[in-house]
Length: 417
Image (cartoon, rainbow, N blue to C red; front, side, top):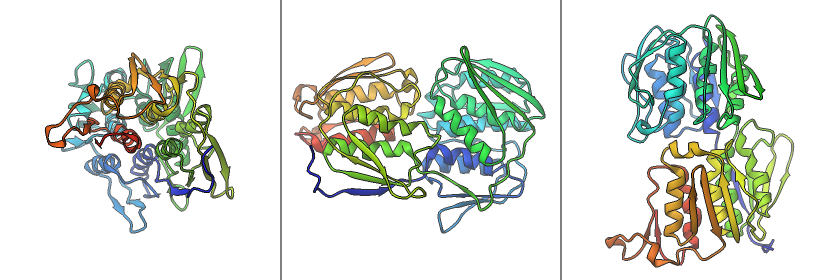
């Protein structure tokens, strides 16, 4: 049991990136303007703002950190819509520009160009869009709209972002639309997040799960309206996973502020998963300002963990499993190979460099944890200038970087990330 007298770390979590993206897209469509409060202003969400600006949206960052949208009609892009490294930006923008009359060109950085969008573009083509993209739908590509309301069926086995994009686009179209997604839907909670965010802006999207998949219905056109006083972005459960795992790994109690225990964000599942690793968590504080506390205890490998609905937790859970005595299997998300990098391969390589025994699976990883970190010199990739430091390549993926930042202080040898 960890010494309860040790200092407790208190942190306030930033706004959710996933909610921020969706809120910006909806706010840009509000005819009377909108204010998005407490957004996460990061590289990815700034890419969304830049793309929306290319489409005619006027936004201003306020001193208090909120972003104000002036209102007004959107038009097809007259210049390339550079989505940077943000897959969410690219996919949500694809659905939006397909509803506009004209041609829009979308692109991104080298990493984004590797990510598939074929099912999304195929569905948009079923609704009348034209595109010059190849079968896998990798950027750069052009889209010519407008699409029309109708029914489309496809297999979203890589990303629920395809469904979120189509659902938001359907609300802009005259008439009724049905989007039928075959089971299983990858990262399903993010679709719930899209529906909840749209509802906050007064936009209705129907969502029904059946044995064969998920059906989305939308009648339009609907115009988003900003909630009175502005839309508040909830704190980010995806970000919460890293300090919680760091607390468990390093034995320092932590208290996280700003999280909603009833959030539509799927990564709130980190709490029951931590309990499966033997950790103690509890909520405290007032209802309007709850605080999540973790008291570290002895780690133990749990039964297999399915991250099919919460793939963003994968890197943090790999770091946790590396320190938990026993064998942990984290699987169920083959789509992890199509994120900012192949996250399964990147985590396996980095863990092996730190001397952690692991095995790649098609849809995850098997980790034998609890041993010393950084001990196996024969598995270390050396850099001449570092005199034997362990050098881990995170492949420009922020979640891989954060996972190894948790493990690096435990290494018996210097680590450079």
